[in-house]
Image (cartoon, rainbow, N blue to C red; front, side, top):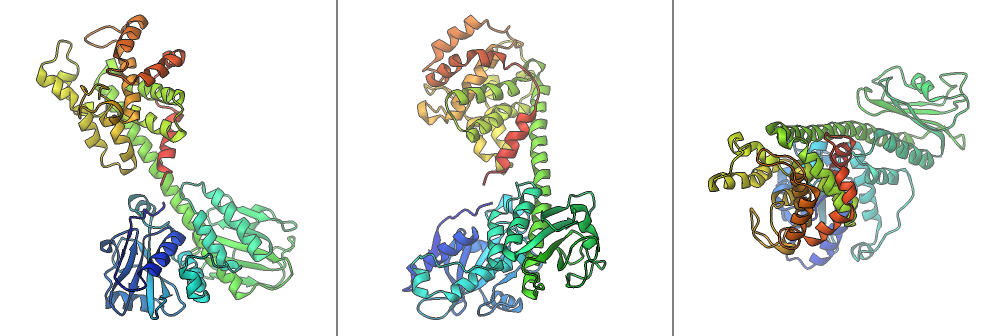
Length: 513
């Protein structure tokens, strides 16, 4: 998930502008909140993307902890405070233009939940994160200070280490694991110049991913190439092939984790016939860790999607259970709203949002007493005010679902009136969110088309008369016109139940930054 850049904080030193540019560049590179720390002063020079309260306290203990991890001139490290559940911190050395050294510290989400809840940098394993940081540290060290701080685009040296940075930028937990595995293997094979590379999960029910070709080798054969000892993290085999029938001349195998329980990354047969070098084998480790981490987080992400899907489905079912007369109303409003949005030329994301708003627009009625909600006679003023409170109750119910916050304005204001006589905020005209204006028409149309305890459903002629009188007064005339333009489609949206459409929009909503 991309970091949210909320501005910068600097001291009054003469190189403030240069440091701002450098910090902005590094924050963009890592897509993460970043601070430049002056170890001599013991304070932050620049903060980008977060305030000081979210960064470690810039004291001697922090610097000592980084040094203990191996931090020093030319060396990037990854550090996590003991007994903390917060982010991972990437630290790399920076030379300031007027002399002296600074420490750049970037915060990265340590898990999928952290990534979704807080605007840290992308989730990636420590080995890959350190390799990425080292790439940047090497670039900074090799550049002329004037070129770097002027915001230029220094030449990126080729080599396998650059591969790690590119893969991390492409890592998305919303992607199926197979997609990222294919990307990583293809890039790795090209960078190393080998005939084939393979990702071999330790669980045999998971598919082996093979990129490239080796004579006689099939994907399933790769399990036989894994070292027998799970404690043997790296195997460089320049001897005859482990499986004689397969034309393997050189093999390098690296486990993705210290126990060899997740999977192995294999590189086979350098194209020029050379033996694998220790440097090449070292590159396999962070790539293997990236593949394993993305696979694990993608599964957690899928579980999260299913959880949100279940919450929405349960809430919608709870609304229907409150009153048999309105059963299916929320689903129909959602579908009608999407059709109106399509007629109005709204984007796919906006239509997805409207679908969810339609499903949840009446969720607050869960908090309304049945004696009032199902009353067949006229409502007293107090009872009517209680009914009106359902929009704010709904917002309160949904407020803890952070991924649905952008839906709340439409849900809250779908009973506003164009002339300012609606509720709860008496908004008028364009001050009413467009989504709420669309929901208002969809909601009213379905309500008038349905039988309720206090009246029978209205005829199409009666509905048309009410809509025409209310256009420009209660409802947005553009939305009413859109309904007439697709009236035949809207009349057919009378089916009940939650189908694939809900799964699609939940996936879309969770996949957004």
